Image (cartoon, rainbow, N blue to C red):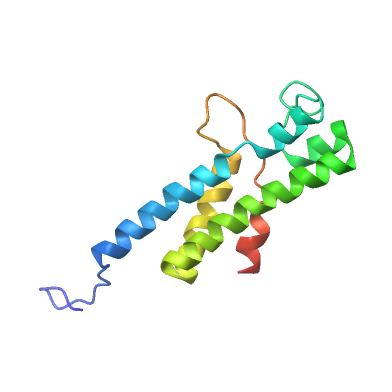
Length: 130
């Protein structure tokens, strides 16, 4: 497309823009789910109070052992996979990147209450592998 001044401009279809916005919100919400702390709590530890006080899978592993740590790691990895898969289904490769990146942000800076986030490490592999 060309602008009225003759310069080239990349115009975005409004439906695509809405789709990207929805994927960013959905990916962020998925990434914000505190799955590792829930698994840690089920194993009898409070990752916000004990260990390095980080809600990530590595702290669950150290405090609750390899079984709970592996479960937490897989749950956190699944958040990135789920966000990327939803993005892929909605808008293809670009949607997978948008939703996956938003999941990493949600894992690191969750919206749920005043709880601290992790480092987003387990949400990254699906995005890097894409």
